[in-house]
Image: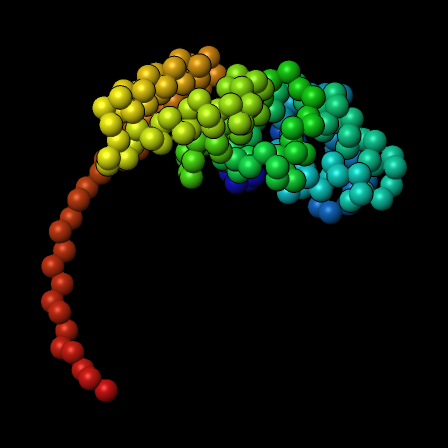
Length: 213
């Protein structure tokens, strides 16, 4: 995925692309990582970093040398980047995970989550992602569970009453209104012009004789 991001910048921006740095490309040396982070912080541009690598570099107990710890904290955590973009952002669906806690410590002006699967298991995971980019927009996890999750689940059962279904629709409408300020949903139409035509084929395969051993 990291290499794909580098290729995408080159494909869509070409010579207009900003400076691209990659922590993965410098290898496993913390000294080299510290140098490239300092250069990036001074010159600007884009720094590409994997989730696990970020968590390891910003955990004080994982980095031995104090000078390297200071550089990693300064460049990656506080003051950190001006803009944070998290691809495959549904990985942040658990607010108590080590990764989510590490990323939540970043002091930056703006955060963006990109994901093709915002809803995987339940609405509480969705709340976690929204709270990461707009803290407090949906209230606390417990109030969101009470005001939205339970109400919407009650209205989706086979034996739900008409009033429960109506209340579910009202809550969904309210939730949609709240998310309008920070959620941008794009469907297939955005990519249709770039995709090759779709062809469907029906293949008939002759069944072979069955052999019993």
